[in-house]
Length: 225
Image (tube, rainbow, N blue to C red; front, side):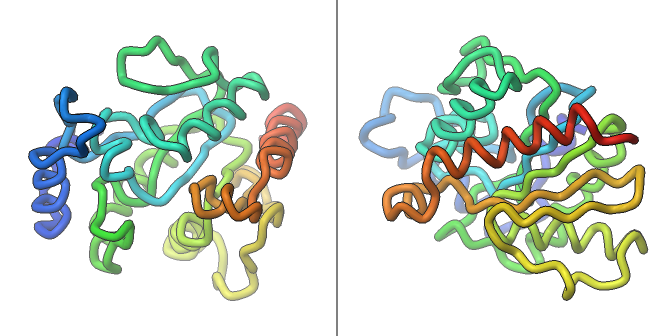
């Protein structure tokens, strides 16, 4: 599936944008060879925790080829995953930096960097199959942490499509909102996205984000299948 993701060209607008960014580059990264392709999920195939984001950053995942790698959101996320025992390193800078996840898997709702960080509804639909397949393959999941409302809504839309929930309307997004489902469905935890906009304004603090993953860890250890 990873190879299918990497060669995907289902969304012409996203193909054009990610390739253009990879050619033009940002001055700070002019010596980098940009990835410039769809970015697959990353982590432990036996993960109990799934972390779901929005999409690769233009000069983050689209540059490095690893989800949440090379931007400020990833700096915070992997530092927290390290502190809570889900990662062997507190940072993620490239695909070859030696980072390994333990009991966790990180992925995105859309696999290509979108203009303005805003995928179109059709692009979400085109990409949803990959997330559905990951959910099928990650058979040990106990917890899903959705980073931001869009990731939250994307995950719920899959549950509704599968007939596992009747409606998405009763699930309200809010930081630290927790929803438990009948087994074997994992517990869903909502979190503000660790974007620079949220962290610099104080909407999401380091302590708030750490508490989300401490709670996720406790559910991973105690929830029955």
